[in-house]
Image 1 (cartoon, rainbow, N blue to C red):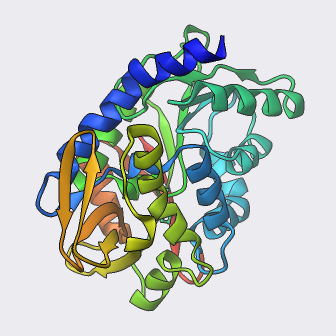
Image 2: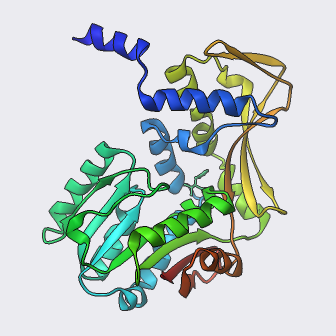
Image 3: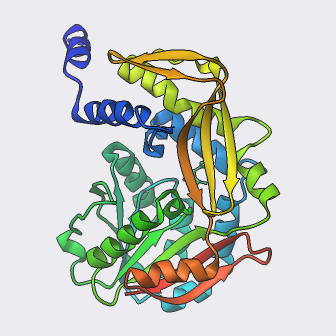
Amino acid sequence: NVHASALAEAHLPDEQTTAFAREAIEDLSQQPKKLSPKYFYDATGSELFEAITRLPEYYPTRTELAILKERGSEIAKIIPENAALVEFGAGATTKVRLLLNQSRFAAYVPVDISGDFLQAQANGLKRDFPSLGIYPVAADFTTPFELPKAVASMPKVGFFPGSTIGNFEPHEAQAFLRSARQILGKGAQMIIGADLEKEERLLHAAYNDAAGVTARFNLNVLVRINRELGGNFDLSAFTHGAIYNHDRHRIEMHLISRKNQTVRLLGTSFSFRPGESIHTENSYKYSLDRFAALAQGAGWRVRESWTDSAKMFSVHALEA
Ligand code: AVI
């Protein structure tokens, strides 16, 4: 019954919508205003992010992939036989396929909040790796979760590519690494990607691409607020801006109001001055030393760190 379910949707928002509403109102009430980057990723946002990874200016994805390819045999050497590969967050399967091709894993455990996405991903991998045990876990990987019983006795290898760790505040990044160590257990390994600090011009270009895909990705959070929470943001009255904050070693993404305006959202009004920003994302850039200190602070030992020849991106092998 289409009508009844539409009504249910209008009157009984599910838990996630309620959380989105609560968080959006709280974050837009702050000074300076902000919104959480986790709300970028609905179906459209995930597609826009995939498009970002193919942009000429956005070097992280292709550089990390090249490192994983080039260092494949070195990575394979530190991976025990018949281990379980536990991926925190499940995106495109390109990177994980590389690892699965290079080493003999007995099991793959993708962990992601979106159950539908996990199933599609698992189906695709099952066809190409028929002897691999695939055990998806639908969970928020930033909070503690249990590994499937089937992999209990296998050596564990965590995988966290893409420099997603860079979107966490340093204290959150450390908490995540500590929790991953607990989940994976004693003797575990972890393969993790981290973007490196570099010439500002290159960072600026990567987050202010000429085709405007990153701008659309950033604005998509306002599209979602309008559609899912009944907001009335005028998209043409905000511009995308990404700047490098040297002192804090991070790219900051902002949505900047072009004029004096008031936006209404669920009965609350938010006014904006011209030039006032909503801070939507941080993307921290590490040095090899700062990354090692972060990992060590969370109880990991850095076994090896690999970079490309231009030192754009880094991949680290950690040991619990
Ligand atoms: C997912 N994450 C690592 C991306 C980054 O580079 O921080 C998200 C992104 N934001 C703008 N462009 C890409």
